[in-house]
Length: 331
Image: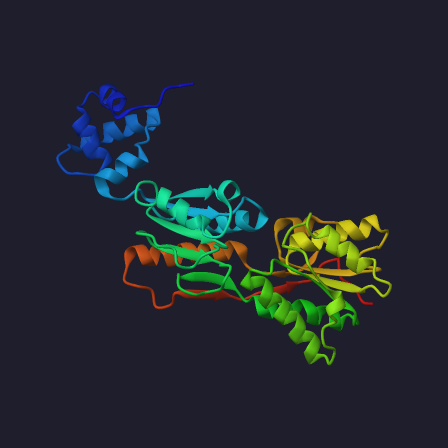
């Protein structure tokens, strides 16, 4: 393995002192223009990168923004894409970090904020955090927090309206036995999507049938058992709204195993519009929440917190829309 290029290597190659290289790196005065250009050329040629820790000790800034996620899955991947797009126009770099799988449980974010803040990152975004009272010395923005927008600056989408849109779509297609595969009970987003489902049914004069509701936990694999329960009912639903796309794809998996054809025998609607939804067979009808834009808005809010003064709004709620594809059809 090649050794890391040091500031001494740069000084030697450029024929200057280490202190001169340090001045160039930190944009300080006292270096001739020709020397400044030569040192920067050597830095580029050698691929020199200063230590983040050393930089933070000198300037108290790392110019790195951390994104803390519970795991790298389609939802968080889209968030990261949006965040990275905005940071391309700034001097900040992005550090994606996950540790919940090793530590797990409520409050895992506090431990990793403490580990990263100050020496590795200047600010942080927490994706679907379990806490909203993170005690941190750095600015923090939450995306789609478990408990909703209570405390930290927050970015989320209109989950309630999304639940209404999905259920209204199935009602308009003539379905009356509409099942619901809920997400995790501890998440506000899941509760709001279920509330939207219930509201749309009530508005249509048909209160929700509790026998057609199951919990899918926002996981493709964990949705298989509850989906099988719904599809094994003597009077099974003709349509199911799932609280996220992974659960909806799990329903389609089970329907295929049971020789139930989607959408001829069963219509399925998801929520999120992750890339897999458009590539499934059939392509999934879903409620699109603008995941990349959520990441982008979180970065903009965080940059405003870093630059000051306090932004006018600490809560950004983005609209959702229904994307009609091949997994839903008229009864």
